[in-house]
Image 1 (cartoon, rainbow, N blue to C red):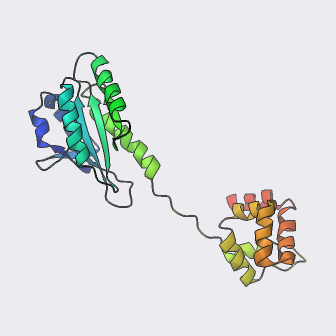
Image 2 (cartoon, rainbow, N blue to C red; image 1 turned 90 degrees about the horizontal axis):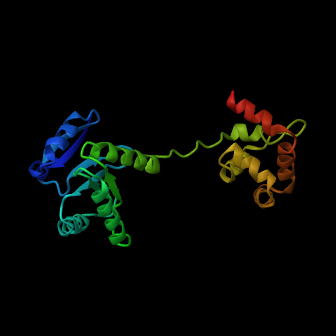
Image 3 (cartoon, one colour; image 1 turned 135 degrees about the vertical axis):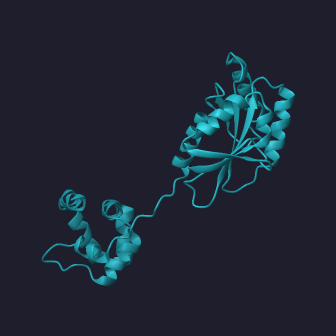
Length: 230
């Protein structure tokens, strides 16, 4: 399970009876009480390259607006630039959801230009954790680690640019080509555009470029894709 923290101040809220049970029942997070917690919940973001957390401020729909604004100001003072993320969740802890939506709307208008933290709405105390978990999933999608494509082997490139009786590209030309084009698709696109052909001719010369262009114009794209996908 993923270790997460909650503020000791949450225990003094009447909503704790319900929220505390939801945190304990989580099968994803192991929540531990933290007296030094500057916000209500701190949850790790596992998809980031460096250690990062999501810092959550919970605002309750029954709290006076003056108290809500004071808590927001204090929360925003703690925000720092870096990998950590900050979010504000308006929680409906009343019978109807209208008041929570009113607070949500007011905060969006009030903080449109000044808040680095997005605002979520949880329609019940029980939905606080699922709402935040969905937000974390979206963060992970946006900031997931993308591995760079593997470079093309020069041997493959040398034979993928000419056909008999023309000899394969020299190792020198193949190395230049892999520097210019990082994938088979980029190579194929370079042979189809005027700018791509000009760049190839600049580095490889017109004779070699003509052989490469002729090769890729000769119905080889479909058969080569088939080989790569086998």
